[in-house]
Length: 350
Image (cartoon, rainbow, N blue to C red; front, side):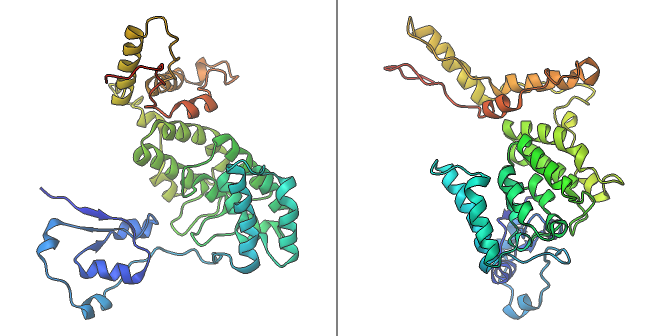
């Protein structure tokens, strides 16, 4: 049959040309769309001879479009300004120091005195992507001019609003992002701005949600996609509505869960949940009088709660939001597949 081999994205031109010489082809659509410099090849390339170097050197390489006026990566005092935030964040992760305005503020002010710029340092992009409202407040107070800083494009062609909803890793808590986005918009961040591909912040929100649903595939991705779109889509909608590029990546949680199907999909427990169920049966059968651990809410239970809530719709809700799946509980409980601790002296037979 026909199949292709996908290779991780390449960063240098030398690597790119080396793969082209070996018979690989650039995935031009992915490159132009900003997904990365990916390559593919069909099995027959293994039997093809290497292309001559002079042919490869003359071949055109597709590059990601760049946003006009995008800032370069920070250097010097600007880099040190952002390093202060990164360092404080690392110390906070290890429990050495709390990340807040009181601890970080004086150091950031000192960097400004030394010639750093909030805009050039890309600190707003960094804080917004991590949901760090306290530090974001400090950076906004030091930004001059603030209007330029909140709408600046980083080297990836993204504004702070775009970075907040589409970070490189897993997004932050939707409620924390909601507060950061409110703060940026109150400082006149423009929701109508587009990147080189025509995506607004709303388009990046939908695109990240689609990535969480279709690529990540885990239950925490489902819950984050639902909660973030529910909280943020309305306030990020451009004044003239979504762009064509935004519409191309629009995501609908109802469609993903099969609620709009003529015959709704039956969401069955996963293999890991079935394993956990057998584990609990084993403990209940052989544990005798020993205390048994309480099972955590399963992925299946979480999905059923979400499905029931979405099926009910706004008309059946009391408007207080009390029927909505609890965000903190569901995001924590979506680490499915965790085997409950067993009583001392017992081992699972499964």
